[in-house]
Image 1 (cartoon, rainbow, N blue to C red):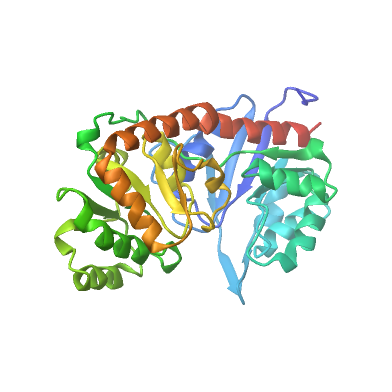
Image 2 (cartoon, one colour):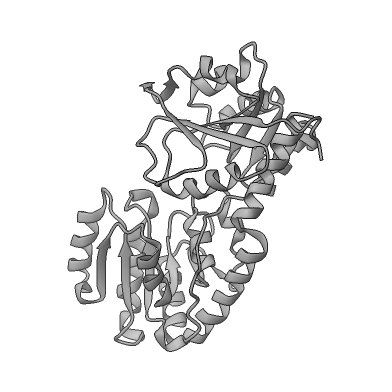
Length: 354
């Protein structure tokens, strides 16, 4: 509704690396009428046979936790709109905003960071952009409160694409607590194992823990499983990205559990009709806002005893898992589809060009 003309819009999107779950997002954005999308990043090239976007890989330099991508300052001049990662550690993105430019600049990201001391800088940078694209509505409210023009602040709710999810509505098939993601200390997966050991004497013998992922904590978690005496009920599957394989794990899950972090796995879980369990103060990019306690998931206090109680409740009443999973799926289909995420991009780009 904002466009002044009907010519093709050349869009450059900067990324640190092109992660596999972002490929469907950029493909769908490139499907938009008049949008010509190019992704510039410093990771591995796309493995997709025929992506609908163009891709440029540039060298990344790093020093003291800051990053700079070479060549993108000159490259950007060939585009109408640049969408940059809203992460102040990436100096090249800040330079893309502040340089003498002919293109429009849109920030895209969470909009907040671990260190609140840098919030004034984020606000200053946001004011100088042509549009701001954030992961959730609560972040939008914060920026508007700090004086950013509400007309230029948009939301592209962070989500994942799931093709043909199969929702298991048979409570008898739901017999596992599932984790999917990288095995990193911030996830606090040891809490999941302690809680399961605590619950194990009060739940059916066929209920297990399935851990899908790999990372630095693998060996520590294996040793902990052994010391807790639950090796026969915990399965480490390694990393799996194939959606068909993942469906099998979702189909038998009472819930997806991630004690310390609630990221995109929340939406992945919801898309398959599985409730999500995490701490009420878990690390999140806004995805935790999707969880309504005891409606489509559980937000527990952080106590391992509390987590164990939830495991006992779901294990002995799998019909509750099905009911909450239905609520999770409805939330996903009504509020967090990929098409809805793309609409935020479309509105932000069109506004920046108005």
